[in-house]
Every structure is written in C-alpha cells, then in structure tokens.
Image (cartoon, rainbow, N blue to C red; front, side):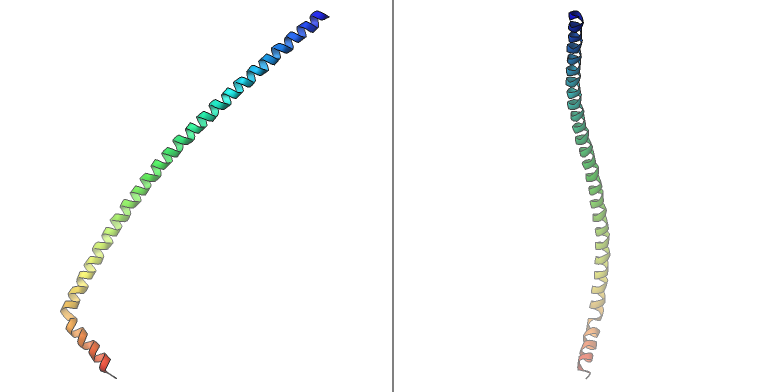
Length: 103
C-alpha cells in the first residue's frame, strides 16, 4: 500500500511540475505575443502616418495649384477692370455727378 501511495505522490509531483512548466511557457508566450502585438501596432501606426502625410502633401499641392489658377484668373479680371476704368473714368465721373445733381 505504501508503494501505491508513494507512486501516486510521484505522479502528483510530476503533474504539478508539468502544470508549473506549462504556466511558465504560457507566461512566456503571452509576453512574446504582447511584444509582437506592440511591434505590429507601431509599424501600422508609422505606415498609416506616412500614408496620411503623403495625402496631406498631395492635397496641399493641389490646393496651391488651384489657388494659383484662381489668382491668375483674378489678376486677369483686375487688369481688365483697370483698363475699363482708365478708358471710361471720365464718363463714369460725369454720370455719377449727373445722378447726384438730378433732384
């Protein structure tokens, strides 16, 4: 009977050692998983930031191009208005004076 109890004690000790080893391995795997997850998150964040910056740069260039085109159009319109004024400012002044004195 003592040999059976001794053998059961050995089996229980072996089982406890196996469980303890499994828990250590699980903890190591958990740390490794967490490290890999953090590395993946960092890489994904960096890649996302690079793509966002490329999009921002592209939009900034497009904005500059559009504003440049609008500015050229505006400057053309201003030049035409100045020419119109220079050619007709005397007539405009006379018309304004006539309207002001019409009562």
